[in-house]
Image 1 (cartoon, rainbow, N blue to C red):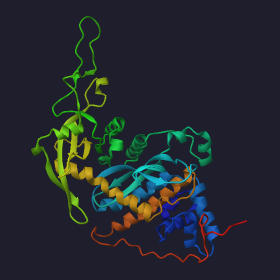
Image 2: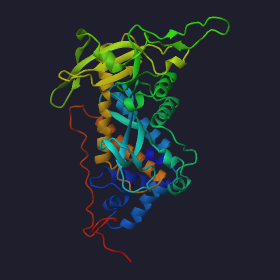
Image 3: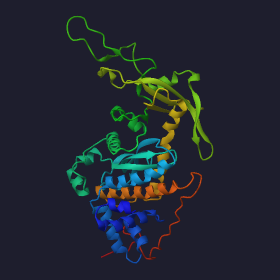
Image 4: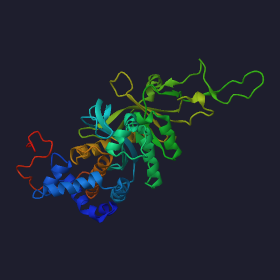
Length: 421
């Protein structure tokens, strides 16, 4: 906590920062500012509320600097129990009413699995086999918000923040992690990111490997096939340099390729122990070249792995991944890394349910990110505590006790709150 307080800058922020993180760790249904103030100082709620609110909504400390401090301390503990396995890109949604909170719009929300009025944040996490920690966090600002000067001004969106797609935000986070010399590992992401060719090329350009999901309709060249050079035209002129397709030489969708594989290409692989039984399914992997708009290129895409999953009893294959892991990589290693994304589901579950990640009630850009940063800092403490115990030991329960809230306390906005003059 002393290290985090120092990263927050001004000495006056140190006590509120420690109090805020303590409030996030204490038991309580809501982890917004006012209920936390009531738990922390039941005899002085108003003053504590003002102090915490100023820290999270107004104080100009750097989220990046504080997250870097969290990362440097927590990674040491994580790596003591094993090396980094992967960097994981993901996003999470927060259902929100109204239209005034920064970034809120009707868009796909993973929390409910459909289009909903919400805001979405993109994160980069680093993981070992047993633990994971978010190290970068950024709100996705829809284009309607990015172009609305009035709403930007009201919510304090920085002038340098322009519209970026989620893959572009994720690639920027990865680039910053490389610049900060975070120990490297393969990048994992789902199909919302893996289908973006620029995202995959950006990762390769940073000299990182990846295992990313792709959609079933993505096109690739069959194993052993490559796009052909365009035939030379008769007569004068410069010879063509772009690649060529014709009716007899076309790429195929990954689903079509999977359906055409022989039965012996599929193998049953166990990738980890589940809560009740071992998790296993049928997989196949072949070396292919992506074909996305390669007729506009002068050289074919490099060869990489296409991993496919077809569970027993399913009528069709269900999932697909592209990977730039080395050619000698075994199928089991490919599968285990592709399936390693499950670990950050625990991150979001605990951050949202236990540490109040989605409980912040303010509307501003700064407050949204400050609250998330402090939630991640509190989560980093839990991760660090768990590294002190064997993975099979339930030694991470803190058993912290909160001061009782005054019986007549009603947070603002409560349906039972008394009317004020």
